Amino acid sequence: MTITENAFMLGLDSNFYLKDDFESPEKRTNVTWFYPKICAFQDALRTEEEKAEYFSFLDRQTHPQQTDILLYFHIPFCEAFCNFCACFKESSAKYQGSQRVRFVKAMVKEIERNARSKYFEGTKIKYVQFGGGTPSALDQDSMSEIIEAVHREFDLSEVDGISLEGSPLGLSADGYIEMLRDLGVTRISFGVQTLNEDLRRKLTIKASVEQVYQTAENIRKAGIKTFALDLMYNLAGQTDEILAADVHGICAELRPSFVQTYRFNQWEGTRLDQQIRAGKVSDVLPSGSIERAQYRQIKESLAAYGYDKQLLINFFTHLDDTGPIGLNHACGGNGYRASYTLGIGPAAENYMGERSYRNHTNVDRWIADVENGIIPIEQGRICSEDEVENRVMVFFPVFGTVRKADVANLEKYRREIDWMVERGYAVETDEDITLTEVGRENAGNIAFLFYSDEEKARARRTMYLSLKNKRNPFHQDEMNIPRTSVFMQSKLAVRTADPAATPTPTPAPTPAPTPQGS
Amino acid sequence: MTMAGPKTRADIEDDLRKIAAEVFPRHNVDLRSDTPLFNGGLSLNSTQMIELTLAFESFYDIELEPELLTVENFATLGSLAELLEDQLNDSDD
Image (tube, rainbow over all chains, first blue to last red):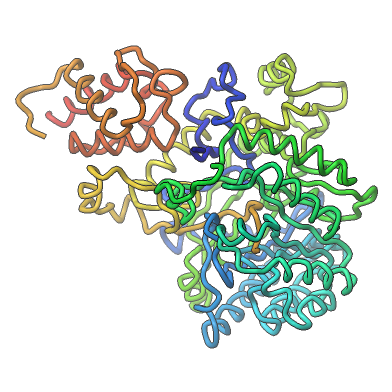
């Protein structure tokens, strides 16, 4: 069985790079999409005074002209829940009628609060992204009200594009895609995951294969410039033959501009994880070694269908000229090219220079705070110079290469760079450092080489405090909390956190790329 | 836990062996003082490290300061026992 690895796990060992099991299939971890990380407990903004001081920069300064800024809008609703998904989400059915109206009004109010601050005076937005959840789970009127507010309040005169993640369930509604196009959306993506009916049923993916094909056709017909599809691998029961059929269906029939591949992560606490642990999934189980073999299979077969250009670690295209699609702002919008990200909506994460902060995930709390004129954010930190500097190298494995000229203090990483080159994970030239194929296969681990020891220590404390307070240790929300050993449960249940030391945490997932609404 | 007197480091190591066996029944490792808890040895991942922490906190009825979750303190069974010896002695004071 695959025990889920993640970016925190390797932080146990500050000398991990010296170990022989760097490439162990069960030790490979996901690449980092958001850094520096935030902790609900260590980075709490406890009082309104603290918050006011923290956010005073919005009215004190303007955005530095030399850096790009991306707007990220988080729509935390889904029409249906896939059983493998560990992201925080709410049922869209729960937020209908007056609740939906309140949510949209709050989104518009947050757009206005930020856009009208001194910080955004004269600031030209470089890219706009809608993620979730499933943004297309919002009805047309609601979505258009939000997008219109973005156009009205922010300067999009030089925007490279507007991107939206969706699901065939919402996107197949009459006129939805045309509405998005008319409001300037230039790129749509949605999750296919697999085209195998049996697997889709087991993963509780609600959209039918027919809806997948129809939606792809509708996107093309509407004239949306680019669209991207997600493909998952290493799923339970996904044999090499099924994976080959998935790649064929996506590349030869659906023919998107981009294919985004996601390895299956068995996140502890998801419904699928529980089923696997209970022995209810009897097919081929996901494993680290299968994952590695299927990653190679995917790369080879994508290339055979013409998708031979790898733009990010998991992002492939057949296009020679991709146009502006926001890749410069990858990594949840804060790629190593120093983009800033303003995140609006429950659970959105922000990176504004040295400030890294996270919005409430609890949707009701987020709405209530906005309605009451309270900044709907409970955690924020001012990152150290070291962390800001490390971002370039932490994110470089996502891109596969880094220009030396972009690294402020290259020699600081000399030991790690030499080690990567010696081990055959990277090639260094006068101009850049580029991962080899085997380096790309271990990109997550390589990213972790560039975390500072303090960052690793923070990660351990985050996990400890989260589990102790019964929160998801990664996103700190209330979903998918890892099981607690039976003999400890009663003990932990009676232990109440000291409210002064451990304030009510804001559950908050990152906007990190994950398989999208299916 | 019933405290008959101050715990020695050897006592604490014995406690930790029992706790580890209960929390990680599949990790069939002969735990000696110098057995690493991570790479090699018990081969814990970070979630398991926290599980172990919560388990011995519960066993001894103590709470560790998050700052003590260091690689050095959790390097081996012996180093963890040393940390706990300090903690238990402090709590007895």
